Structure formats: C-alpha cells, structure tokens
Length: 148
Image 1 (cartoon, rainbow, N blue to C red):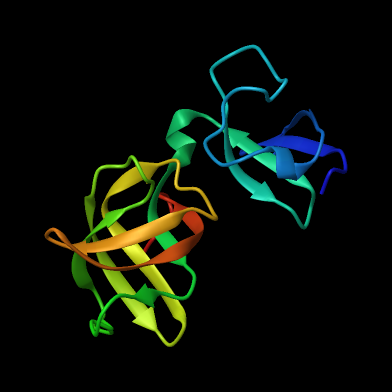
Image 2: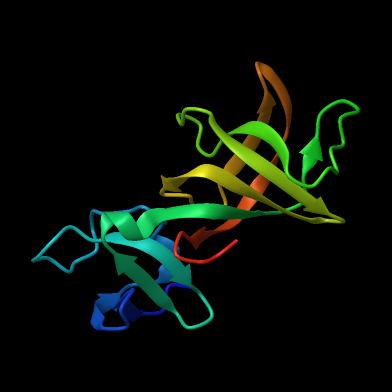
C-alpha cells in the first residue's frame, strides 16, 4: 500500500520511515532515505506489518527459495525429491546448480551456493543442460542461517 510505515533493520531497530511498501523491492539500495554507515539493502518486505526490512549485503544471501505453482514445459513433470538441475533466478542471472523439491502445488529449491537478491515476484527458470524444463514465480528466499 501507499501508507507510510517503518524501515526496520534486520536486527529489529527502526531506522526510518517509508512512503509505502509498493515503492520498494528486495535488493534495492538507492532511495531508502536512511543514509550513513555501511550500505543497506532491502532484504524483505513485510506487507502485513507495513515494514521494509533492510540489512547489509550478506543479509541478502539465501539458499532456500520458496516457489509458486510450477509451469512445466513438455511432459517433464519432475516429482523426484532433490532433483538436480540448473536455475536462473533473474533474467540476467547466470544459471546456478540447485535441487528441486515438489509436493503437490508446493515447491522449493535448495541452491548449492547461497545467492544474493532473490526477489519475490521474479521468475525462476529450471534447466537441464541447455533445455528449459519450466519455471515458477519466486515467493520468497529464506536466510542462509536457517537449517535445511
């Protein structure tokens, strides 16, 4: 919404005020209006609490990515837990290795190496070598500190 709310550091400290969560995206650095100190990036948006969460560059890293309903191309509806594939998390992103986990309409990937700036609403494409298998909308990335 366009309602003002708090800009909150990942440590819980309120750093300032925003002009509506719709004006921010995960990975954003410019236009936060909270200068000084180390560079801060939007690490999450909590629309329910009307908060923009910010942190350092390392706070953008995640290893688990929750996905929306997968759109498969062709007949390859992969349901094997831990299926190894390559994924693209952004249009200009290099493909990286991951494992896919699917249960009914829920799906997630575990990246072999943490990636920065995984943004909700962006697309995640699945590849087997050069062959596009399908894709899904990114729901959210989870912090690397969580155990999988």
